[in-house]
Amino acid sequence: MFMMPVLLIVGGTALGCNFPSDRPILIDQGTADSFLDTQLKPGLFAEACAKVGQPLTLRMQPGYDHSYYFIATFIEDHIQFHADALGIPV
Image 1 (cartoon, rainbow, N blue to C red):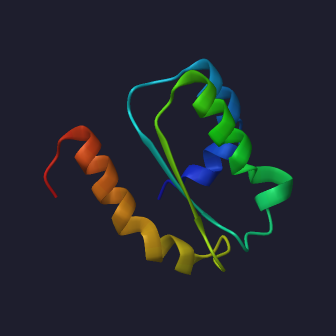
Image 2 (tube, rainbow, N blue to C red):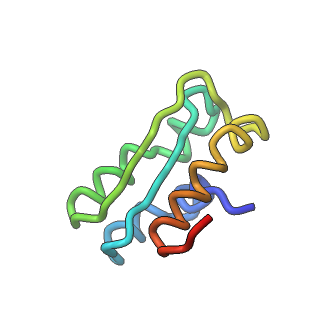
């Protein structure tokens, strides 16, 4: 299962700056994630997207970490989000 935070760890901020798209991005990030401030830094990604006009919805989820329960809680939103963006009925 692909989760957006992986992109942030491996250089998503650079991708957001250099390869903007009109396709929207949805990121859910737990505020209790131990990697939030040291590796993920979603605020930097949001700034990079804003600079180039990349549509982004960044939802900070209070109390969630980087666990299965975080993924299970928000995965349905992401499936629907991507289906809508691609025009695929779910």
